Amino acid sequence: MIDQLAPAEDLPSCCKHHGLFYPGRIRRCRRHATPEQQNLAADIDAHADELGVLNGEDWPYGPNIDVESRGRLLDWAEHHQLRLARTQCQGLHWLARGRCGVRVCNRLGHWMDHVTRWNRFGEPALILAQPYRLHGDDMVELGQLAADGLHVWVHTHGWYGWGTVAVEVWDRQAWEQHIRAS
Ligand SMILES: [Zn+2]
Ligand SMILES: [Zn+2]
Image 1 (tube, rainbow, N blue to C red):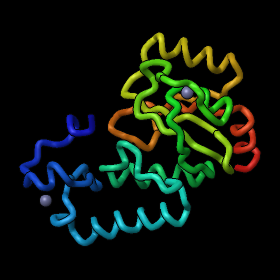
Image 2: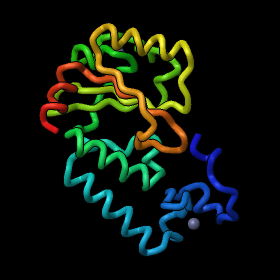
Image 3: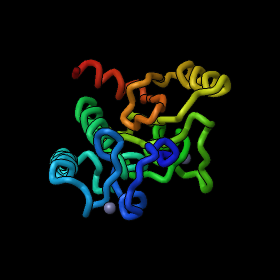
């Protein structure tokens, strides 16, 4: 949880409970945010609308309360030409087939924390997970996905922040198209 990592500031409870995190991990509610903080958040939201990155959805968990992470998400999605996908799928069905027909679809493993799914030009392109850490069994599972033909990339500069690791699991074709375009 993001809250566990928040600095021990003496904040009014409105900010503590309803605030957004601004640069410096400062949490402020709408009323107590400075004009600069409010402008930063408004600019990022306007840019998200302009790009259509959220596809009509709310900011995902993490960026929903973290303005800097919103900015990082936008840069990343813009660079990869991605838009947030709408799906209830928790596993790989959506990535493989564009839909999920499983009645109770469960996530694959521990690595699937803070998961978002992304389309590129209307087609399922990748699953992004941003867990706090990866365990040995996660690495085995991800290795298997790579062996099965998906492009798997693990790095430490995801947009969620807060010490998380980024795990990108790409449809091979979508990845190759992105590489050719960039
Ligand atoms: Zn406040
Ligand atoms: Zn599914």
